[in-house]
Length: 73
Image 1 (cartoon, rainbow, N blue to C red):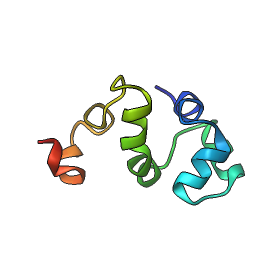
Image 2: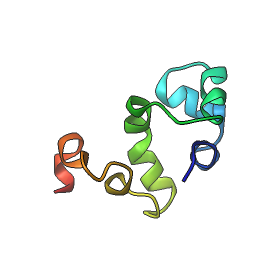
Image 3: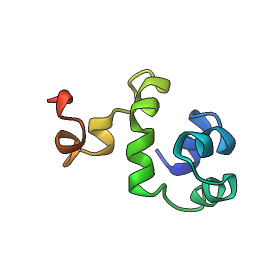
Image 4: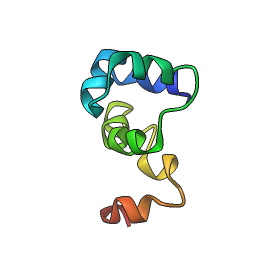
């Protein structure tokens, strides 16, 4: 799933900007590339919930999810 789809699923640029504490224009720029890794970590649990498990933290971070969320082990 690309950054634009993730932002849309989470409610748009304004909502995502509030969730991660950055400006709306910054989030808007992510739609032209990628969401920064640290911000994606902050959004991952909500993304998993909002997608009804279609997008999981394990699928977003297959090599590092155990370090970030040890409870998923």
